[in-house]
Each structure stands twice: as structure tokens, then as C-alpha cells.
Length: 114
Image (cartoon, rainbow, N blue to C red; front, side):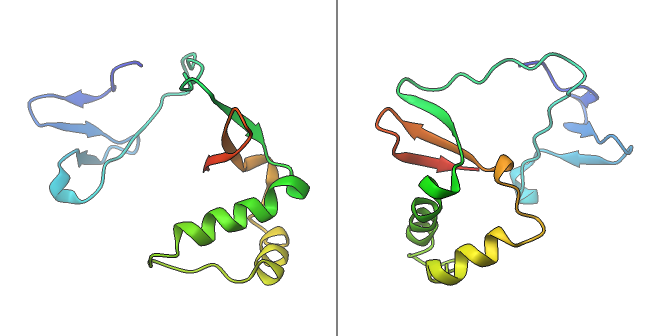
């Protein structure tokens, strides 16, 4: 990976593209990542046994729902029943199945989603 541009080591800050500045300090409560797309991007190095799979609603919608329901089962939110969740998601203006990325293991079991 390339080094961050606009880095001011003395100030410990990185210049935003709009000229603002931010600190990487944990005291701010966030970490900001940036990738410059004007340069070639190295392919992702997946761990052994992990690969990227395209989202197929017929195969993955229920699995994705179970994944989210499990993730939120300890608190921090909830996921409605599949029969109301899925129609609401697939008709949402912001939903694009081409932008759903699944990381799966060698047995095609879902590991992560983005």
C-alpha cells in the first residue's frame, strides 16, 4: 500500500481533499481511511479458503437475513422478520444487489458481508 499523501508528520495530521485537517488520534473516536484511485490498486489478498462471491438473491437473501439477525441478536438493533425485511430491502431506492459483497469459505458459507 502506498503512503498517505499530504501527511504532516510534525502535526500528526493528514490534509483532507477540501483543505480541512483531521487527526488520527483515538481520542477523536474515529479512524479515517482513504485510498487514492489515481494509482493502480493492488488486488485483495484473501486468506486461504476465503473468496468473494457475487450476491444472488435466490441463494443468499435468507442467509443474509439470518446473518444480520444473528449479528444484532445481542443488542444494538434488530432485524424484522424475513417476510417484511426482504421486500422492504429489495424495493429500497438505495438497494443495488451489485453492491452487496459476500466473503465465503470453501464450503460457500457466509463469513462476512459488505
